[in-house]
Image 1 (tube, rainbow, N blue to C red):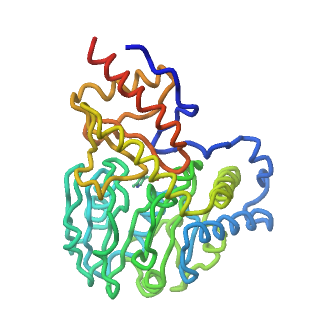
Image 2: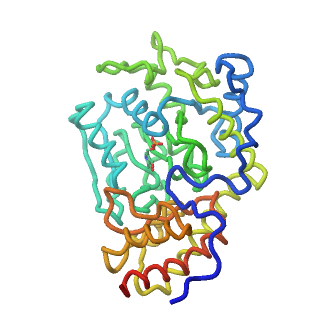
Image 3: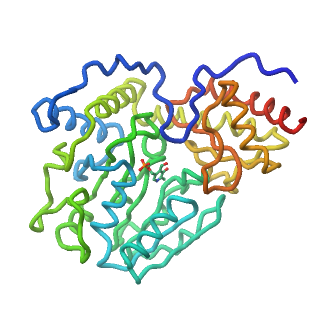
Length: 372
Ligand SMILES: Cc1ncc(COP(=O)(O)O)c(C=O)c1O
């Protein structure tokens, strides 16, 4: 079989750090506040702008606080778990590696005993209908390692008394997040806008802020998790006075991505790009004799981290290596703890034309590997 003629112009299909935005250039960051204190007026202005632009693009309500916090999404989500959980029973929903980590940390690190865990194997969702409105709910909007997302938040009660804590890192900037259903959401810079892995982001609704101010966790709180001092919220964190030092280069890079997102039409345009990418892969899978979605229900298919099963489980690693060697696709092997398969990032920074060019290469590589 001869290889396809066209190649993706950008072979970066990794699920994090993800492809930079179309047209990104390093010299576009030349105006970064490098060598300046993040606590200088110039530094704080950049950080505040990042928060403001994020609120505008994601449509986060004015009464939600948005903070830039240490250690990417992991830091942001652990900060939320450690700061907020404890006063109520907790329902955790897990269906892939990241949810399993949060569940394990709640049980083994925080040692909460009034804990109900609802698990599902890779490819499925647990029964979300089991969520109790008087308990805290912990879940991941998009399971990056299985390519399974929640189809909506209808299962979260509007009049709940517990908090919802949502790891939204591979959903933000690609999916519609219903903020009033999410008391806490976290994400990182390196995912759907193709930023640099660095600080994380947390959005806190009014009920989460009330909890922060009324509840003192019984366990020690490391400085990098502390949002409260003397029972009062440290408001500066939500104006860009970060707990510790961020990279001003990474900040500038994320600002660049946020400006691009505004230029192309904001969240609706980001979602449309990502959904168009999913559709391109869906069309190809529909005609494939060897690849299928890991997500069993089409309504739960992720439009960012698209995970595919392959008829022969020995193939994906070889296929990913072959396409990497060809310079056609980087990092498309499944996540290390997921079942063997392919994972192709399809978020808004990926050009649909590049995905369309990749798909015949998948068939070519499959043919090469299975013929030998
Ligand atoms: C759902 C989810 N949670 C958490 C993480 C960890 O994010 P980070 O490495 O930015 O801390 C990832 C990264 O892929 C993720 O996809």
